[in-house]
Length: 202
Image 1 (spheres, rainbow, N blue to C red):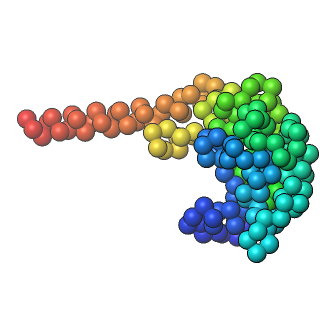
Image 2 (cartoon, rainbow, N blue to C red):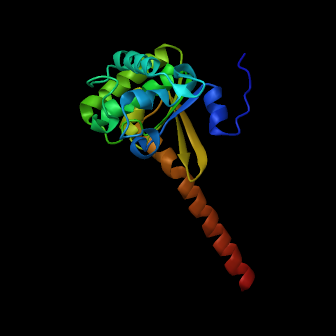
Image 3 (spheres, helix red, strand yellow):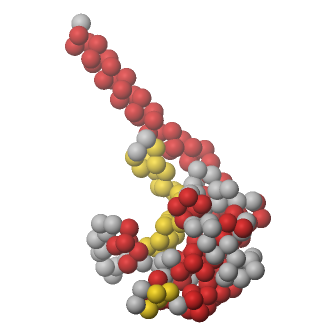
């Protein structure tokens, strides 16, 4: 059975094998002026450094492995990440955590700012990761994207979970209804409170 893990900080999550592929890859996920090698090694310093000093050969070898595995279109580990397309930048972020062998991957808006062709590259990669037995949790505002890639969809509305749908049981109408359900409930509650307050004042 799974072993419970207490997570009090991002570093605890990383040590437990949990990775976040952030929505803001340029601001939070990557060092754009740095090469691919440095970006991949960010989550793997222990494997490429000795006594706090990065071994360039190890760093480049790790990056080359991920470039090949992720099919990142680049001139090599030394290419500056800011020069890559959005899809290839996203692959660098994912490759960083796969190099660490994270088993749980949290994807926040994984294809935002990526062209259509690159989106399907990312979808294919996510499918391959799921088949390897990794757990993927995807947050997306694109309903069509979720319906395409997910096995199960949970809908949050106004801060509450309003529905969980299994593949082949959901419909766009049902998902949209759940998405607005929380707001309707909140409006009904506020209306009741306003009515009661008006009654008490009279």
